[in-house]
Amino acid sequence: MDGTRSVASLDEVRALMAELPGPDLASGTAAARREAELTKPAGALGRLEEMTQWLATWQGRSPPRLERPRTAVFAANHGVAARGVSAYPAEVTAQMVKNFIDGGAAINQLCELADAELRVYEMALDKPTRDFVEAPAMDEEDCARAIAYGMMAVEQGFDLLCLGEMGIGNTTSAAAVSLALFGGEAGDWIGPGTGVTGAALRRKTEAVAEAVERHRSVMTDAFEILRCLGGQELAAIAGAVIAARLARTPVVLDGYACTAAAAVLYAWDRRALDHCLVAHVSAEPGHRRLLGKIAKVPLLDLGMRLGEASGATLAVTILRAALACHTGMATFDEAGVSGKAD
Image 1 (cartoon, rainbow, N blue to C red):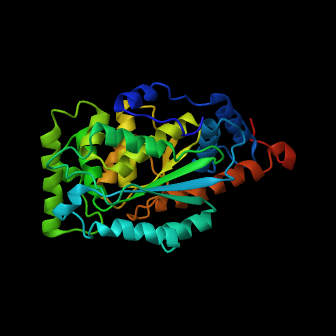
Image 2 (tube, rainbow, N blue to C red):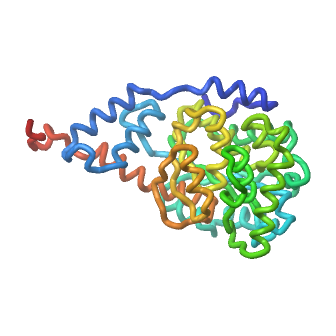
Image 3 (cartoon, one colour):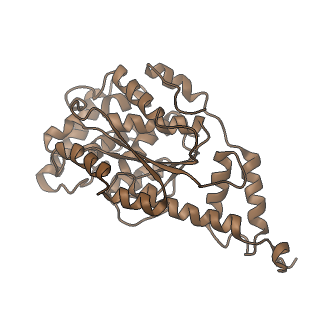
């Protein structure tokens, strides 16, 4: 199945969550069996060995392949940005989308390095979500439409999906979603984002706290939290994660905002992100806390906080290294090397 299946309401999304396929254990076992025969001590390549088994399990084939990875960046604007919660104005979202298209952004260089196909999905930048301090960010139709849009980004023919986002104000949204999903205080989830400090950081914290309190009575489940506090690009990322699972395509998540979008699915079903890896832990402090809540260990810790799927695409190079060892190394029998002594 590819992502052409659409949804028209959040109830349809909730129903779809019950249809998520499980892992292909036979393929994962086959990859693990080959790993045990390669000319190295068991476990000597550490997490690289886990990566190939993960790829095989969720691609449903052994050996897995990384011939055509795709990077998808969803871009949208947030009404809460008008409160001055970001160091940059909202028009930067559209300007950066143009930069992506022109090839001038970090993600363009990383996609070229990783030989990953880049797709940028612009989501009604002239129509930001509502300021979620005053009203729900989206009504149900808008939220469901954004999820469906993300689902349609998943097509047949590629074997890994790297997800990221662009949207001024989206770390404010990510913090609000995380607070509503997992509790704590607003300050636990807030960070500088694009570089805010002082009064702007206080405004950001206050906006998150006020928004969660305002909508508490109507946020009856994870999808209502997404509707009230999320953004169109976060909803689209959630949709892409769902569609990738249905299509048996493994997913690499980027930083804080991207992980917060996926965490909505984890809050609904603890198995919903089993086909996902998190590429890196962001310098945004709430991201490390969020990774603990969803039980994910990132591949990298480089102090990055750019977004735009930069960490997710960088992780493709590590996955390629894991796969090269898995498929290219000789077995003990092939190399005439003695195995471990009994």
